Image 1 (tube, protein in one colour):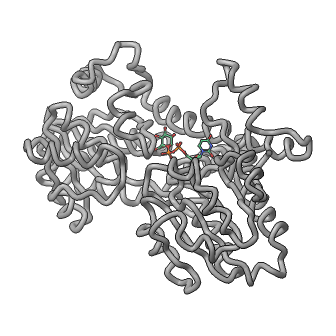
Image 2: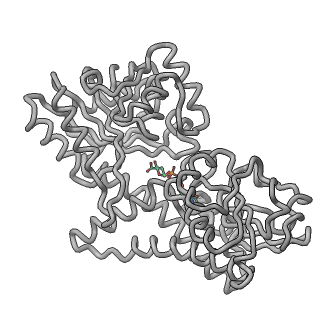
Image 3: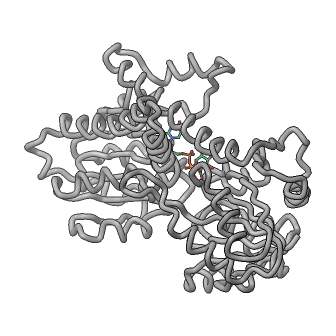
Length: 433
Ligand code: UGA
């Protein structure tokens, strides 16, 4: 199939490269000329395991190309919209980029088209897309909502082995087009879930908000665990073994960040407010997520002493919003760094992939050093703060940790082995344990 991806950000780039790998002829469009230039040379700015090889392979075989031209993109049989929809201050998704893109599409469209929306969009947006295209051109627009469930850090794996493919569409022709698009994956029929367009739009929000709720749920239990002298790790095992609950997304810690959960929870609350639906559930999810940050910050202040803080230096491990990505959008680590930077003597930052990305957000501070490895400057730091659970932090070199001046570790992801650390004579502070 000839397809074009409109918007070569995270979802667009991964989807485009993987659809090309399945044998489709793919053009990825983006308005950012510099990005398109480097992507055409096989250079991607995102760190995603497995993606670079797929990009190179498919550029070489000429199944994958990049453009800034809507004229070229609109020659495809099927357009896949992967435009970002960031949250406005009010929490409402900002559709400005999507609308600009629709304008450019309608200016270049020369035939009936299938328009697949992968961007996370408010309920009713696909209907808007259809009306916009059909009112501004003389061509029919077959709209399909096909929400994306890829997780950063395992996006390639998720693409080739999806849990399900949700398809919201109105016609048999659209169904047929989607079957053809996904046919090379050879998935069993039960993986395809067809529904109304509006249901598919809401399924995306429901899915992300359920996972965010699960995280806030375990975080709330972790707050109670601290008062009960219980251990949240043990509780996770105790409840997660019930198959109705499940183990995943039950890790208590600093809370959820990234470009999806915070934005999607805000969008749902905004939708509820608009229709005067009670919004207490998702407002509580958001509030608990903020509480975790405040609690962790308070633990650091209490343990170090407010007065000593300005004379203290910290080593910080992990800046990306989760491991295996260099994405720092809405990263809780960055939030903590902003909160601490003005109050402490020095911050030493280390992340296996996201140092360059974080620099632009932190260049106003002159008391930050970016480290080449996890242990550089350990001896200059009073304490260590772990914000992102990269695998390389799992079994730290204890003799190096022992160089910390105050022998204190604040583990924002409950990731390290508490017993080993305590045995080494280092104080351990987690969340809910
Ligand atoms: C999320 C969803 O998991 C994907 O299915 C969805 O496609 C994507 O959003 C999207 O809407 O595009 P992602 O944001 O890449 O994926 O990352 P997650 O793995 O879901 O993690 C989100 C945040 O939750 C991270 O900050 C992570 O540290 C945090 N988290 C996750 C926890 O605090 N505890 C957990 O147990 C799990």
